[in-house]
Image (tube, rainbow, N blue to C red):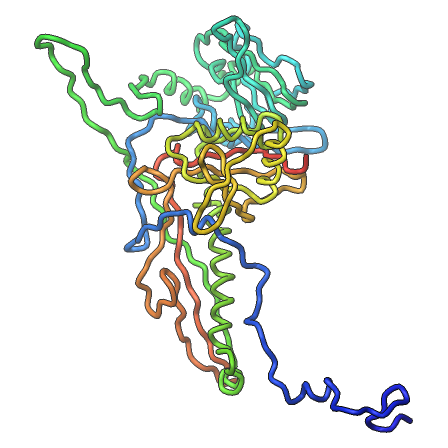
Length: 463
């Protein structure tokens, strides 16, 4: 048995560090948290004070109908369109007879195309409606010098050839060619006509839609404002007015809440050198803000990913995000202020720039240096989801009410406000001597006009 103070057979000559540590004061850090991110979205959005909990976005009346994407059900190798989704076709907009829509869905034929195959050629009779179930296709039109130019891209859920359902459709004016292996559902015109004879409700809806007069509109689908220009003399000037949407979109403030519980013994006895309650609140607020940003991106009601207009969604040309893709994304709107991307997407963009021998911008922003392109900062946001297959999306935004952009919504002036738009409210002490605090924040986001927000879809980050 070793005697006290003897180590390795030798007598200890001084006090050991292990014993001395019992009399020393430790130097501590504040509690650390891995889940804290830069939260660039919360910093980039201009925040608007919302009284009454509701923010109404008034717009001019728009006539554009039936331009949404459709959804599919896959059973083994068989693909079927979800019947109610057929109401996204312009001629069927607003039709809700489930039995007729099911019969129509059953009449679609499944077809497979390999990369490079022509699905529709310009000049062909418009005798089919096509639904893109899977894959990517390019739309070509003759260019000014005789070559074909890509004017659009079609991805999962898109549809084309809708004019085949009209009375006297003109021939196809574009060529659609598969860029990857594609699965397409096609509805022959004669099978649609056959169903009209068997479904009186569908026939009545189609006849009414065909007879409905085309209202004058501008290129954005808004009700036209008649204006005369370039005239001379004293001609009669057109009369006009600006029509508004009868049922404008209203955004209700969403809420993120939690109940923070701290035992009174902890705050009574262990409050030095750090305030236990303050540290508990600080970390809880950080988690609440992280959830707030996640909801602003992914919430199905007001999240930015779900509220981008279909016409502002574009797929990548080849998979990874290239400078060409970002050029097209930025060009879709005026005054693009920021681009939000997952860090892996930013890395993929950097690789594409290196491959081409170009260099992205290095832009200063709030004391940081961030990657940019064409003077637009690309801000990291890990709330943008990355699929198991390695694809994600990038968001481009114009921000601010003055520019008809994207704005954040909150309410400042809450009771027991801890920081703007967030309150920490004392709820009482339980019989177990546990103190409870209600931590609350209210928020939402609004897209004032459709072209304020654009999405680059199918961004591959694994290649």
